[in-house]
Length: 607
Ligand code: F6R
Image (cartoon, rainbow, N blue to C red):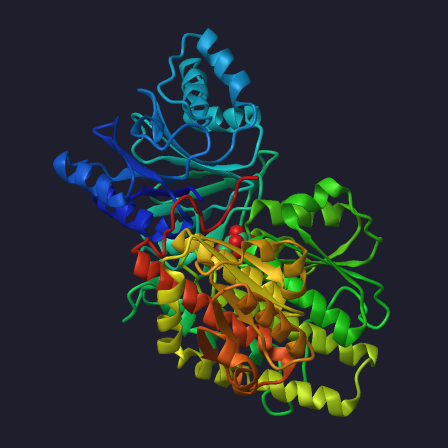
């Protein structure tokens, strides 16, 4: 969702700003813009659509200056047209903004009454006018910025430059993340460390409520009470290489094929390769006596939570509730003081999940965060972090983050079972062996690439697709449907296979492919009956199963994708791979923008 870059530099700012925007493209956007100070005056270029369109504008009308701000906008208030693109500017200030100003209507009316004329339909533009009025009233830019922030309600990040002040950049964080990059005689701000990766490795993250005055040689941070504070400067391990596509055509493809490595990296943190013992970081609760776990997440991360639900209850006999984050707070859940709430998120910034985390904390819950970005808000606000080690995920459709989340949840379920004594030593040992073999088995699934590409030919012409699964394959069916919807724009539904006869069976027709996930587990025979029911009604089945399952039910399918046989516990991780690749190849076939599907944002920072 919207991306911000700012520079108080030594040389030409525009090429660096545009480059920074390119590294924020993955967050999702539909217009872009840049503003700099040229001989003390604000100048800007904006364009709707892709950054390439902005580059064309800048090439046609070059933009000088060493200090500037830039933005990718994901439309909320007003269509993605040039007028609504950021930066928003007056003759005195230019601003870029990520998030929502909830009281913008009231501020707009107040500012209009003072004679300010608005040029856009956005909520953001009020910030530019508010700052201008305060500066016109005689305030210094820094004081005006601090005062303006106090008038703004909502969750946001903002950066501003001021006419006549070439060595000044003002920025603030309230809700949406913002990082400061420290250079040598130049300073940067960015929505995340990825944006700043080639510019500097020295990064500090603003705390919520912080605002900052940046010059080429100084960074002065204030907290929400305007008290000057320091925030640790860290060396980031991110480099340009980590965020390149390598030899792959798309980030999503690269990230799918990275899974054996990153699942291995993640599991190694929790499962000792020598002893196969599973160890978690120190938890703020005692797993032995814990009564219940609350899991909360959005989208793909929510489906990981649903698999965790099966695993934790089955193995550790520990009751689990799973909620979609955007619904969680509003159903006013009963949360026992001292209980454990776990939040699952790739970005660690999804505002629905972050707000749910804060709600649970306020109810006295202990907080665990399963996150991929170690410096994220969720990681910082949790009592304990269970990190995934997926590395930066750039493709908007989540893949490696999902399977590493599953790896953490599998380790957690295992550790909980051990702590609670709910499994025999022999069963635990067998399970540890199965977990240990996951990366190798994932590699074997990736080798089925060609069969999956062939199955994509059946799916690509469809308007509607059904995904069916039972047990832990049910959340993977939903995840498969979500992946297909996101990147190929084909309508898809994931259903528990047994639920089909309660309604969705009416949809079965020869042009509605039915993708059945049927590992050889305790539910296989029942799922096989559902394949029969589908076939009897003229449906085309794509069966994803192991050799045993294909031998039993493959003759009923139009296509089969063979997955290595494995312990039923680990099948959700293995069966995630074919549904990711299937969606990928269908999208390629349809020619969609795989890494940046329409309307989607990587990190959803508005409610
Ligand atoms: C789907 C996808 C989204 C995210 C969701 C939560 O491919 O990427 O559904 O899973 O927006 O994002 P995080 O995990 O960053 O909280």
